[in-house]
Length: 346
Picture (cartoon, rainbow, N blue to C red):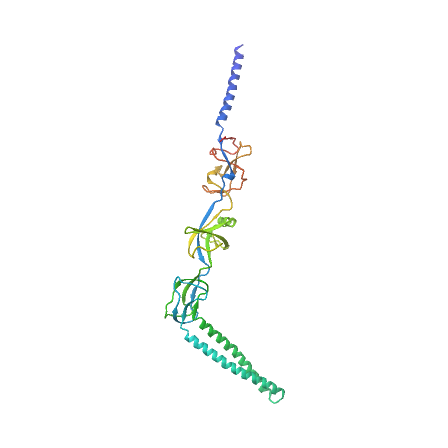
């Protein structure tokens, strides 16, 4: 064989071996990854926010008449039923006024009775032409004037009765005295604060929610209030249609589903699970300035980068992909979109 032929065969042998070597290098450097189905990774985040138990009714009970306090029956912490007496006022002035109003009404009723009889009699006499029309007109005017007086006197009696009734300060509903601002012998005027009274059987929970939390809680199956190592189910009653300028939050009100275990003023947390599934932050990657997740296509060889919206770095992110999507777990650090990888046997 000539030198030229020998050189051709030698070159062919070298090129063939280089090709085999390149294939072997390619195989040895191909990235090996592991995958997990999205269904095994997602979770529903538990959200909890500060909240407080409040009473819907906590009025300041004030005096409605001016008088001296005769006796105080209630003090701070006393639990009362609706209608129980909190205190009584010295009511003699109002009682005397009531007696006078009733006496005046009785006297005027007697006059009204007499005026009515005169009016009826004059009507008969006028028909018989035994009295002039002027006499009839006067008796009618007297009768109507007395009727008008009766209306006014009746109103005075009602007003006097109301004043006497207001000399006893009563609980407007079942509740508890939270403040006492009055003493026996004290002169109180109309509007003087006497007690702060809290309705103890009509409590709600108030909390401030962000826009995202409002969306999440409206989708929640179960909501709880937790405080002092106790937890009870609650439900969303209303959202106040006002976004606070400083906090950008809305006030939410909740009621207890079953018996209340807490007292007004209790500070705790409203807890629920977010309605939308989230992917842990560890599986979020960044490629070309975008956050997303690295998946493996159906061929189980090709990487597919799926961008995700509203991602906050280091935070779980809401994800809306099929639950059988393969999420690349190990080996994803330097992967690129559309890169071919090998799937680990492990």
